[in-house]
Amino acid sequence: MDMEITLVRPSRRPWRVASGAALAIVVAGSFSTLAGLLVGPLHEDLGWSRSSVGLGSLVNMVVYGATAPFAAALMDRLGMRRVATGALLLVGAGAALTTTMTSPWQFVLYWGVLVGLGTGATAATFAATVGERWFTARRGLVTGMLTAAGVIGQFAFLPLLSWIVESYEWRVAAYVLTGAATLACPAVWASVRDPEAAAGPKAVESRALAVLGRAARTAPFWLLAGTFAVCGASTNGVLWTHFAPAAHDHGMPVTVAASLLSVIGLCNVAGTVGSGWATDRFDARRLLTAYYALRALCLFALPLLLAATVDVPLLAFAVLFGLLDVATVPPTVALCRAHFGADAPVVFGWVSTAHQVGAGAVAFAGGLARDAFGSYDVMWVGVGVLCVAASLVVLVVRGVPECRTAV
Image 1 (tube, rainbow, N blue to C red):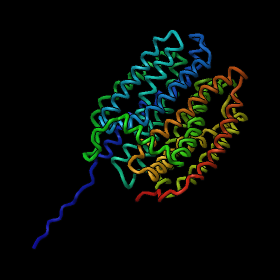
Image 2 (image 1 turned 60 degrees about the vertical axis):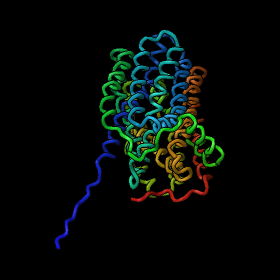
Image 3 (image 1 turned 60 degrees about the horizontal axis):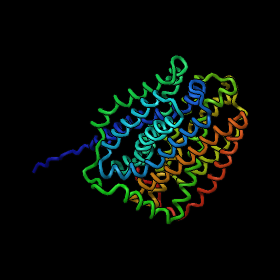
Image 4 (image 1 turned 90 degrees about the horizontal axis):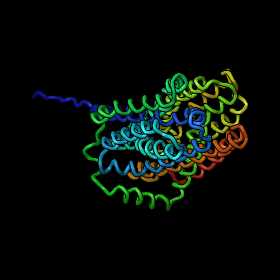
C-alpha cells in the first residue's frame, strides 16, 4: 500500500509581518534623534534657549513612553496594522507642522506630543508584541532584530539629516522625514497582520490600567521600571540628545558628530541582535548587570575623550557604547514575560514609560546644565553613577522562572 507523504512548509507570514513592522519601526525611529540636531539650529534661527528646546524633547520622550502601554492594548482592539500605519501618519504630520513654528510651545505640541505619540506606538513595545504574537522559538531573536530596526532608523540617517541641516536648513530635514513616513504607509498596511488567534477587542484604557494595577503590586515591576528609567537616561536622554551639541562645544563639526552617532547605531544592530540571541540562552539579569556596568564606564570616560577630531579612543567608545546601547531591551522583555506572562507586552509598555521619563528628565536637565555651567561634563558623570546603581539593582529581581525560550 503506497503511502502519500505531504510536506508542510513553515508559513512565511510571520517573517512578512516582521518585515513590515521593521519598516514602520525604522521610519518612526528616524524621528527620534533629529531633535538632537535641532538644538543648535533652533537656538540660532529662532533665538530659543537650549532648555526650552530641551522641554520639547522632555515632552516628546514622556509622551513616547506613556503611549507605549496604551498602544499595546490598542493593538488588541484595532490590530497592529491600523496602529502602525496611524503612528506613521502622526509622526509625518508632527514633523510637517514643526516647519511652521514661531514659538517654543509649538515645538512642545508638534514635536513633543504628535511625534511622541507616533514614535511611542512603534517603539520597543511594538517589537515585543510582534515577537509575542507571531514567534515562539525565536522570540528573543526577533525582538532583538526589531529593536535593532529602530536603532537603524535612529542612527543610520543621521549623517544625511545632519548634512541637510547644515547645507540647507532644519526645515528641509523635517520635510524629508515627513515624506518617508508617508511613503512607508502603504507597505506597512499591506504586510502587517495579526494572527487569527489574537485577542479580540477589549477596552484599551481599562486593560492597560488593569495590567498596570496588577503589575504595580509586585516588586519586579518597580525594579525593572527603575533600571529601565536609567537605561533611557543614559541613551535617549544623554547621548542621543546631547552628544552632537557637546561634541560641537569641543570644536567637532556637527556632521562628524552625527557620523559618530551613526557608528553607534550600526554597532547597535549587532549588539541588540546578539543580546536577543544571548537572552534566549542565558540569565537575563546577569546580562543586564554587565550591560549597565560597561555603559557606566563608557560615560565616565567620555568627558576625557571628546575633542575637535575623532581619534582611536573616541571611535572605540562609539563601538562599545553602540554594542551596549539598546542591548538592554531583549533581556528586559524576557524578564517581563517571565514574571507577567500574557500581560508582558503591556507591562513592558509601562516599563518603557519609565524609560522615557528617565530619558526626558535627563534631556531637560542636560540643557539646564549646559546653560548653567557652559559644559555637559557633570551630566556624563552623573548618569554614569546611575548606571552603576542599575547594574546592582537588577540583581535584586528574584524568583525568575526559566527565561530561556526553545531554540
